[in-house]
Amino acid sequence: MPLIAHSDLPSFQRLKDQGETILSKDRAQHQVIRELHIGLLNMMPDAALEATERQFFRLIGHSNEIAQFYVHPFSLSSVERGEKASEHLRKHYKTFDEIKTIGLDALIITGANVSHPDLQLAPFYEQLKEVVDWSYENVTSTLCSCLATHAVLEFRYGQTRQPIGDKCWGVFPHHLVDRQHPLVSGVNTRFDIPHSRFNEVSEVQFEKAGVKILAKSDEGVHLAVSPDLFRLVFFQGHPEYDTVSLLKEYKREVMLYLGGERDNYPPLPDNYLSAQNQAILNEYQTKLASGEMTIKDFPESLIAETLDNTWHDSTTAIINNWIGCVYQVTHEDIDKPFMDGINPQDPLNLKG
Image (cartoon, rainbow, N blue to C red):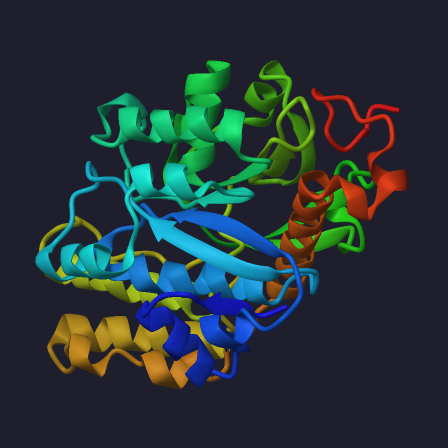
């Protein structure tokens, strides 16, 4: 079923303008169908704040047609914000206290822009730990993306992320390790996922944590679940990215270089750009260095028209499966065979 526009959050109208199905709260009240309330803890920096909203909202809206989806965005007061983003949060986001009062069926926690490997230095570390501890006891399943995965593996499983040197940046092929888990039902055995990170939790560390790995690549683990097989879901990549997200990120890196905030000109993302687009950007770099072009001449629109997206279908399938499992665990009466004999430590009864 569609997303429910239960507030005046601008992302609802923007998604509707882009052709997504968005149902007003008034219309939703006339439908006899269950609701799922999903929290979105958005820790992304200001430049990506609203885009991240839309990315996850869109994925939820494309998923299982079993419920009305109420998505409740919130953030953390310890995440530093500029004036515009702070106003957006005041007008459209809930506080964590309000989230606890509402209650959630599921929770998504985004990544954040913290390049230093020591997450305990991040100003939001303790607040994030409080949210995760609450969700572990009160939410059916929590999906962690990128840095959130690193943080949870540290403070729940004692596995500290490590720097990897050069940034892992681009679109990388992955393969399923476990083809039986409900989260990967119907997912291609090989699929692509974008990554953008300076640090990682290694495969060995995932295994030491007792975490079940579902998908990985030569760049490391992407998809995994907590030892109970569902309460925590881990993404180390960024499957929510739009087709143009890495291009926009590359442009921001160029701007940082021009502003003296990074020492070297950024490399191109791996496995993302066609040979022609690489040539266009290399030519742009040359003309930028010679003074023939400025950042205003960055060929974003030209390149965006020809970019391929090789990860959306698999990501949608995984999110669809996740929401379906949340619904089954939350509403036990709708699927007795699935729920018969469940173990509280094994909510999907996957151990046999």
